[in-house]
Image (cartoon, rainbow, N blue to C red):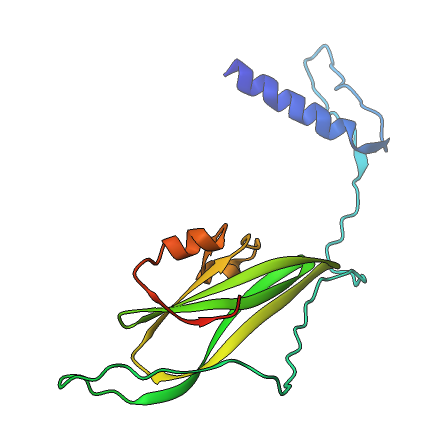
Length: 199
């Protein structure tokens, strides 16, 4: 209880210390008559000036980072792979033309992304790409690099992507598995057949 009273006294003392007081009237003690007649006394009065506080909004010009990625259409030569699966009495499939595309989002330096190999194993295609950092700086901008091949194959094939190179520190790049070297990537998918190579 003593600590509470002391704390309250300190708070009140600090409150009064931060205020500007102007005394309007003097203190006057009550007059006491021998007949024990007491007249009403008067406490001092003060004007208290406190800081004005205004809360609102203010318009300021700030630099806000914004990234614009512009996609342009261009006619380019892309590899074309036509796959005929072996047919038996139970397999019935339809070939569909489709694009296999790999992308990475990079910062700091320009990068190049190339599909190096496509391997087949069962009903799965394993796409191995290589991400290589170049010397040209792009500052704090984000840039997406990509490569693709055109594929005419059954639409029920699964596609798995592996990238050889250092994974850029962007959430976008978590879609693919990254390896340090080509041999490390190919060791992860043994017993597969190379159906496309760009080495």
